[in-house]
Image 1 (cartoon, rainbow, N blue to C red):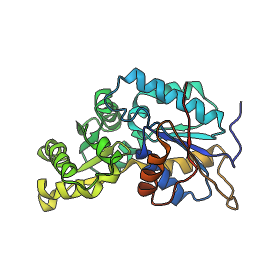
Image 2: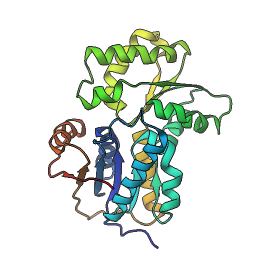
Image 3: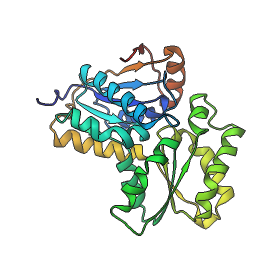
Length: 276
């Protein structure tokens, strides 16, 4: 089987609005590429769920995206990338499938940091995927992974700069500050929306000359997406016109409202889908 035509969409998915941080990077940097976005809001958050259950959700979403013509798939979800990426690639060997853990680790190491903090969901931390990916090319690197169970609900509720968010950021960054980490990976695609709050907390916890670099895997992932599209000969033509589609397993109106805010452009016409 061959890959889809260049005019076909890039499939992107997450448990909720967090993956829009990746979709937004694609829209800004690859403007001729259509995006097919799936938000599994009926099951958000994924972070505290059994890993086998998350794998099942992720593969079902991949099935949906492929059935709807996706020419490649981006798992804009760290825990899905940690537990479902190999299975998805085995199921669909003809379609390039990219996660966000390898891009995040690559970007953190590219800063020159040897002490790297990771803010992630409990499931991603439990998987150990970031530590394995970081120390594989640099065995001397020190990695501090911190689970952040409050972050996804805060983002989904639109409370990214609330006092509760700042308190949580202080709590989760404290062990990273104690370890003198030089870079901090935002190990969940919801977390870039908390960046102003995280920077405020870091200014309190780190001395001025030792504040860490915050790494958003979405930026490196978009560079890798561009490379994969070119490598597989499926980049959309420069003259192409784009239209984007949004699907959601939960409440459509809530997703459109929150998603429009976080994407920075209106989302309308989203459709509700129940996966088998």
